[in-house]
Length: 157
Image (cartoon, helix red, strand yellow):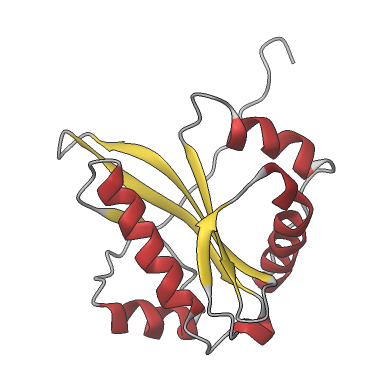
């Protein structure tokens, strides 16, 4: 029997593979290494009873978890409504071109629909031309903005 790609929500037992994929993604985007114990810090956020964070996993036709999309609920002040923010979408190099990216996006829009949200938003680096072409093919529209990060030092430091 032939195995087709499967999109499903992450389970606790998936954390080691998810963290492997996250480290591949971090390296792919040439981002700074993240602090240790990613799985230990992520698990409670992802699997808490009242979690507002979801990770969808893509299983390749061979059954191996080959990609993920991470999402959280966000509020648009100007629209006065919630939307689903897709923080990350990543596929392992050897899993690209198998339709898993489109399947993950279908899963993400399905999750938004299930949560009663009518929009998904995300960003991608401006140098990631492959991702930009992929998102354009889906019919998504880009909104130019810069993303900033401001470190917050603990009080009393």
